[in-house]
Image 1 (cartoon, rainbow, N blue to C red):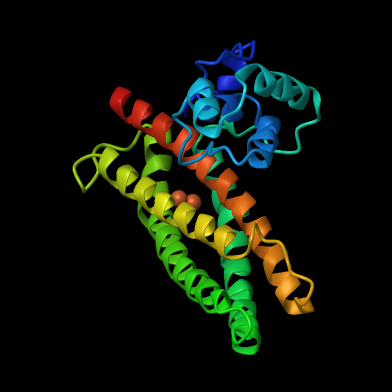
Image 2 (image 1 turned 45 degrees about the vertical axis):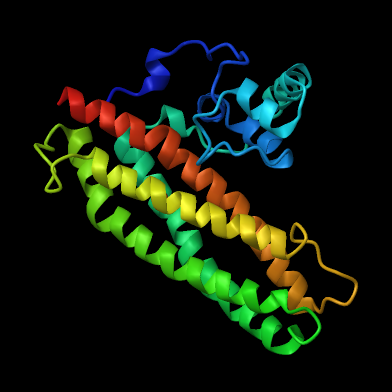
Length: 245
Ligand SMILES: [Fe+2]
Ligand SMILES: [Fe+2]
């Protein structure tokens, strides 16, 4: 089994403009909140540096560093994913994020259908919201099936030192495929954000419409944390471990 990194690393890496967003959130989960608030992509875009993210978003790096320092003092509500073994992290992702997606998406699809059927006559975008949530549900369920049925069992074998080859030839190929699917899910939630004015209800929105928007906002935030744990922690560490086994 992989040695617990928290026992090997005694200090948190120093924060600089060259730190990547993925590294920052892996070392300090509380900082994800700052990135969420500023809509900086730390999951699929986790390889960009703080300086690059600031340049793209038109932000001052010093102001962002100050906000991150303040977040670092806040109590982190997120688990310490970077301190887990590969097996612990795969189990954690399945038992929290995957369970949440499986229970939440059917509810969101059902609400999106009801809202579109009732109110699309006054806002045609609601039909696209329904279609987008439906397509996202199909994609995510098939994606998680591949992770749970193929990739994660192999991750656990690598962690136990018994993974002696992957039937696709390399662990990097299925991981690349999972990362491409994360991009696609991220684009779907970004489109939903556009179609709903940032998940904000208008004054005429009924209770179901409001519940749908609140649910989509929460889903987007969970997806960011879920993808971050896979793209920035689980996948690179699995590739690194596989190369050593
Ligand atoms: Fe996943
Ligand atoms: Fe995934």
